[in-house]
Image (cartoon, rainbow, N blue to C red; front, side):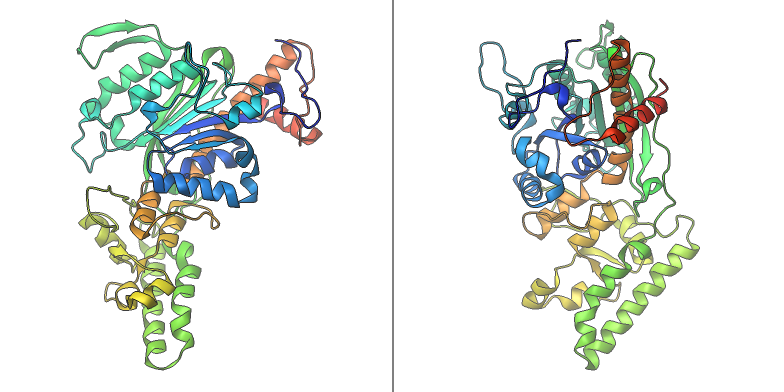
Length: 445
């Protein structure tokens, strides 16, 4: 390994000085991006075809101080991932990553990226769909594998619905694993068994994580694949994240926001105030009772974002709506905010219905584990779809931290082999180096 280069003062950081970097495809409204950011990854690109979701990413990066690094170095691309070109091709001088070139002082090179992540579309494998799998035109696993080959990142993280782990997709999963790490599998196009050379990775884990195990007040099982390049992994051990928190109930998650929604009506007095008090008390009684009595601790059913082809926003199929009703919430739609509700005169539907209040987009975001300061672009239905289709940030953070432990431990190991002390990176102190040693120990060095 070459001696690390220090950029001139005021110039771009050199690759050796940088934090852990990532690129995410199918980024949606940022659920996975937020979690990975909280785990210590810095995003060089977020790619999302939906223009509302892409605008959500841009606006939050523009406004939130904790995303100042991404303001400087991250390209948010509203584009089809099939057209995404992260590095220059043969004979081509241009790549889609403009800000990354500012970070590196040149275009990104193959093998430099720390993590390629993506929540590839779930309809091909969803229990709620036709489960066409590889025959579904929305299956982006092949494109993900192409990008793995093109970028050759140190680690790969792929998120999908739990349905991909069903028995009917066993052969397709085996094919994906063989593409990454080598081995025998049936080629989907032909059904013929063959031996794949692999792309140089080890699939460390491909299993289902339940969001409620990570403090998300929702039943949301997601299948997550983690693969790490074999030369990086070496003798290190990837530790699959385990439950970090007890399940959080809908009552605990939404009580303050529900009170805030009823407060303007309570403050006016009279009959409206009495109605608001009764509705709030009824919701609290049902939601708190569910938290105390139900086996699931009063957590929500899986939010369903739906698609542009299937009408407006609601909280899912009949079974999910029944579960929401037991929590004191109407699942028949998504509520307007206070000002819009006044303008459209929808308070009766939004807050005072017999089945309880409908959730606002902001409350749905709480159920998904989004931070309070994350906002969403577009109209109400577009915003709800972004929320309902998201990967809960706390789950992404837990997986990201497990990956980061290995990547940082690998850096410490490489430095030890070369007989040098790990550098203190810009903005870091000696405590950060000590943390790197801790990461190394957790990863089994």
